[in-house]
Image (tube, rainbow, N blue to C red):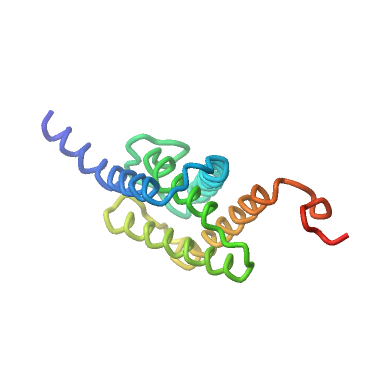
Length: 169
């Protein structure tokens, strides 16, 4: 029984540590006076992550090992920890200038790739022969671009382009 409990603890550590760190950072950096922005970014990121990870695993590109609490092949600790909080902060801090949005997307894409690599190092994520870091980075950029569109749409009030405040007549 002790060996089984120890093995469960070892499998849990990477997921739990990333979950706790992400929520501490969220607590320090989130503007809780703007809950709609945080929810749109966080829930949008969760939807994109679950969709892409489910497809990536179904296509055999990578495997999540020992998710502890599985959620469509992913770990619930990952989905509702780093993914939700990173998405919420991504939306909150998305700059207005397009060129800065590009840098914002690239920076978050790199952060996500680094986290993914750390999960590989501790043995809870494994690429198959069909996947690589560059492929993963491309998917990260595409996912962050979709999230930027979602956050920008929410910020502009979900209006059609011609009806936005300040739009040219």
